[in-house]
Length: 253
View 1: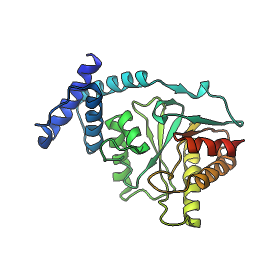
View 2: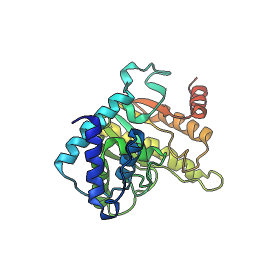
View 3: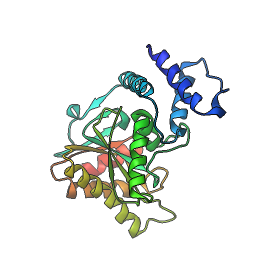
């Protein structure tokens, strides 16, 4: 199959799953087809799907990853011993584990093509990530509390694992509880990585986007906690916005 044929197969399979989508017109434009496929992946509930779909999906996502390009931790230069700063798309980073700023449902963002990191990670990992998260939640029997961490394989992503953590949602001013929960997110991820022999972890800017934790204070807590708790684990602070890059550069000297 060509990449175009793979994309058409995936879109049609997902449309056929839902009777309400069967009359939906598939756009001819390649960019619009990519967007439609992402939207269909985003709204799909965590339920099994056939082996042929998974095989084609993985081939498609690997080809897309090659097109977007991969950054390897081995090619980065530390800004402090064992600590790196990198601006880019975390879904293209090859390392031990990346951290997903998840919501309390833990099965990803269901808003089509939303700009959050949770949406991107579930999109480019493929449908098996949502299935793995749903299994964890079924076993747990309740929503994921903030400040903890869960581990899953990374599936089609270039990293080995995904660490899922729910950060605090700030409403009004930042409270001591907010600070304690955000600190706990970093500590829990590092502890879980250590227990599973994961040598490197890439942290996104937990809670700063949709959860409204002020960027500067969140960065300061992140850096302080990682310096105290990382042990032998290599840590990458992954930023996407220029404002966060400037903050971390200043904090990391």
